[in-house]
Image 1 (cartoon, helix red, strand yellow):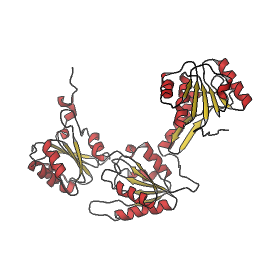
Image 2: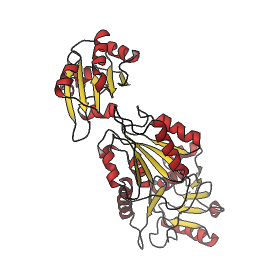
Image 3: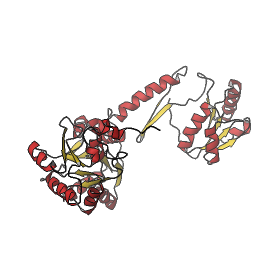
Image 4: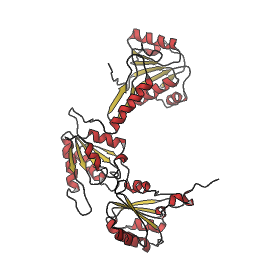
Length: 404
């Protein structure tokens, strides 16, 4: 039988301060146990935890009195005789004991454990202990959960909640592990047009998928209705994932959705995503900052054209990354020239970054608008203006590390 023990605020004793004792102490401190380590000598990590009052370290040999009142004892010295004695004391006092020296006879064992959201898994050997095998099995099972390979939706009724998940720039393998776990828990997914939308194909058929995607000239579901959908489904006790492109808080209106949930008393969590503003240029070899080229980057929305901050950044030679700016590209280039930027300043336009449709168009401030028109540049696109957008920059001497 495998039993999960809640050890927070309960007295636990670890006998021994070596490698095994240190690993057990580290995990028990994280669990919130009232931890006592008994050992004449201990690792630097145990000493440091004791100095921070995360545990009590009794710097001496163990005695019978040490296990009084303990819920769990771990005998982890390098002396099997001492461990056996501790185990016998625990047996008489009916206290559970893990004897690290006895792979078969120990009355309790520590599972190889990992945590994935609100689920923990543990693997223990039957018969003789085989820790490395247990760890290998644990890690394999953990990967399946983290990659969304198991339906981990809640079955019993519970409080509804909303998870704002940034799915990254578009490629399905650029979503975070936590984001994938959230999708595996979702009863409802409210999805944008952009981002890793192909992940929706992995969902169980009975997961409700609501498409609220917007395009530059078409907003079929206005933002206030999206907010209402999130709150409505969560109030019904469902786990709602708001799947957004990029990062929820980078021009994603995630702040408004959080506000709607908080106002309605709905539990809400933000799971950050990789923002297209940095990731898409990086994927094509454009660093938004580079020593000796640009130490400042400004990320702006292109809907309304360049604002005063953008004009100042262009004048100062900072990197400017414009999202949703295909329709206002001419205004950005004119503003750069008006601000005194060099007309030869490189410009890179990356369409559908990280997807099979990705295309990079190179230009300069002086001809970017013309080239974009001639090549038929379309949204979604990330526009990078600045010296970092120079084709081949990272292969040039400019990017080399100076030798002492």
